[in-house]
Amino acid sequence: MSAAGSVWNKNSWHWEEKNYGKWAEEHIGSLLTSFTLDGPHGTIRLHNPTVNGEASVSVRKGKRIAAYEYKLDCQWSGEAPSGEAVNGTLAVPDFSVESVQDDDYEVRVNVQTSSDAATALKEYLRKDGAKKLRAHLRQFHDAINTAESEPDRLEADKKRREEELARMQAAQQTTGEAKLKMLEQTKAEEARKREAKAQQPPAQAPAQAPAAEAPQRIEAQPEGKGSVWNVNSWQWEERPMTQWAEKHLTHKLQDTQLTLLDGSTSVSLLDPKIKGDASSSIRKGKKLLVFDLSLTVAWSATRREPNGDFMADAKGRIEVPDFSSESLGDIQVKVTCDQKEAPREIINQAMRKEGVDQLKTILLSFVDEMRQA
Image 1 (cartoon, helix red, strand yellow):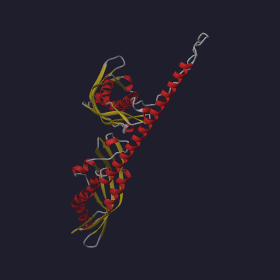
Image 2 (cartoon, one colour):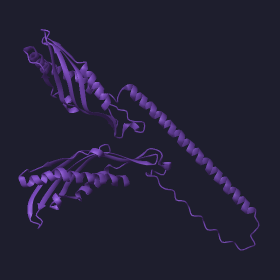
Image 3 (tube, one colour):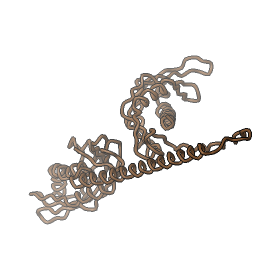
C-alpha cells in the first residue's frame, strides 16, 4: 500500500518514522471503553483503560511500515442475570503487531467478588469475551496500517510535492537568468576594455612591474558538498552508500578484537553479514545520513591466566536487527552463546555486558566515519 512521507522525502523513498504514540493510546482506549458483551451469563463493559507502550508509522521506498507494542489494563463491571453486580480487572500483556496478526495474544481476567454468578461471568469474559475482544481490537491494527495511506492525504501530499517542485524550478530559472545577465555584462566590459586599449598610444616609459596579485579569499566549504550543478549544495541530492557501508563495516568488524574481564579474554569477530540500505544526502549545505542496516557476526573468545596459560574458550553469535539512523540512541544487541558450562559462562556473561558496550562503540565510530566519507 502506498504511503506519504514528508515533502523533502521524494516518492517516500527514504526511511522516515513518525510517532503515533498519542494517537494510538487514544484509539485503543476508545476501543476498550466501547466494548460490550451481552449474553446468557450477563452483561459486561470495560472502563478506566490504561495503555502503556509505543507506536510508529514509517515509510521506506514508498511502502508503509506500522509498528506498535502495548500493555493494556482496564477494569470491567458486569451484571449477572440475577441482578448481582460483579467487578474485576482485565489485562493484555502483549498487544503488538506480531501478536495481533497471529491472533493469539493472552487476555487475563480476574474477578473481585466470590460467588457462583461472579465466577460464571468471569469465565464468560475469559472465553467468549476474549475472542470478541480480539476481533474488536483488530480495528486498531487496520486503522494504523492505513493511517499514512488515506486517499485525501496522498492527494494532499502530491499537491505539496508539485508546489515544492514549482518553487525549485522557479529558483533554478531565476538563478540561471541572473548568471546569464552577469555573463553578458562581463563580456560587454571586456569588449569595452579591449577597445579602449586599442585606442591608446604606445607607452614611452618602461613597463612597470605588475602589482602583486591580491590573495584570493578561500571560501569555507559547507558541511556537505554536492555535485557541480548543485549550487551551494542547496538542492536535495542523494549518493548511494550501501556497498561502501557493507564493505567498510565488514572490514571494521573483522579487524577489531574485543578485550574482556580485565584483559584476560580476547574476542575475535568472524564472518560478519551486513544487509540493508545506506545513503548520504545533501540539502541546504548539510549532510544527512539515512541508513537501515542489520548485521550478524560470529564471535570466538579465549581466556588465559596472567602467565598465558589457557583457562577457557567460548563462542557464539551477535545479532543487531536494527542498526539505523533512527536507532542510534538505543541500539539493541542480542548475544547468543553456544556453550554454557561454568568456565565458559563467565565469558558469556562478559560478552553480554562488556562485549555489547564495546560493539556499540564500534558501530557509532563507523557512523562517524560514514559521515566523513
